[in-house]
Every structure is written in C-alpha cells, then in structure tokens.
Amino acid sequence: MNLRHEIKHEITLSDMITIRQRLNAVAYPDPHAENGKYYIRSLYFDNLADKALREKLDGVGRREKFRIRMYNCDTSFIRLEKKSKLNGLGNKQTAPLSVEQTQAVVDGDIDWMANSEYALIRELYSKMSTQGLKPKTIVDYTREPFIYPAGNVRVTIDYDIRSGLLCTDFLNDSSATVPVTDAVILEVKWDAFLPDIIKDAVMLENRRDGAFSKYAACRIYG
Image 1 (cartoon, rainbow, N blue to C red):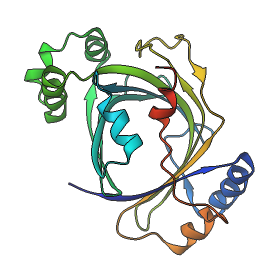
Image 2: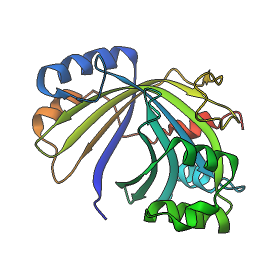
Image 3: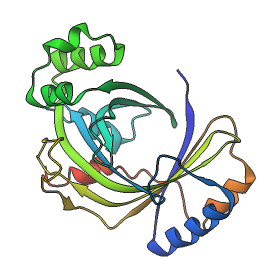
C-alpha cells in the first residue's frame, strides 16, 4: 500500500486569499482544473451503525471509507474510491464506473459487482453484502488544486461545502444541496518529503493540523 503524508487545516477566507497568492507564485495549477478550480460531487457510503462516520469522529487510527466521485458533472469520468488512513498516513484506491453501473449501485442493484474485473468493486460488493454498506449522502464542494513535482506534492483548497442531506441521487445534477459550513479546508499531501518552498507557502501562524471531515459536516442533518 502506497501511503502518503497528509495535513489538513481549517482556514479563513483571508487565509485562503493569502495562500492562493503564494501558491500561484511557486506551484503549478492542476492541468485538469478549469480556470484554476473544479466542482466535486461525491457519494459516501456507510452502514446502519454509521461506522465510517463514528471512526472519523472518534479519531480511529486505522479506518477506511468508500465513495463514488465525479468532477464538473462529467459522467464520462466517474470513479469508485476507497480512502484508507493508517496512523495519519493516507492511501487512495480507485476503479472506474460507467453511468449505468453508478446508477445500479445507487438503486441497490449490486449483484453484477461480484464479477467485476476490478478488485475494488468486488470489495465494495462484499462489504455492501456483509456489512450493510450503502449510499448515505452526497457531498458537493469547489476545489482549487495545486501541484509541485518534487515530493509529489498536492495542495488543495476546498470551500462551498454542501450536503445532499439524505439524497443519494448522485447523477441528478439538479438535485438540491444545502450549504453546511462556511469553512475553507486546506489539505497538503506528499510522499517522502515536503519541500520547504511549499511548507513556507502554506504556513500560517497559530494553526494546528485539524480533523475536519466534509462527510461528517454533511451528515449534520442525518
């Protein structure tokens, strides 16, 4: 498992403007972004006991969560993702999903997953069948991403975080979502080392690593 270092801060709008200016001077925009940003929609999974939510809130050192994700409402590029955490280090595994497969998962039609060519889809099938995992809620937000080759660094600024409440109609781009927080989230991820130039660019006085979870914030209403 390829584990990456991750830090996360909840920052202010003023902080965001400052850090954005610094990053524009030293880092590179993500080539997949449009005008420096993109819109992310995720559909998170959980079980009846809210295992993924509880483990995040309780700070469990070894945990995982599954989600389906797309960018800028582009249904030609939908991914199933499994995000794992191990004592502060992160790993992400992905597998492609078609529109038809995505809708089938949302509808609870999952038998086809058992024979998928992708191990991650088969794993989700197993856990949906045995642990009661199912689609739980939609999380929408805007992301401004930056990259820096040395250290394989990725810095993201996320804001306008919105919840689909109990809605799981992932492919319906007109489904209603509501804002749940005015928080701005800065995330920094890297492999073996974090270059000083990026460390300086994202440094803020009197800030500590945080445990903000967009999924947890979007579960505030149920």
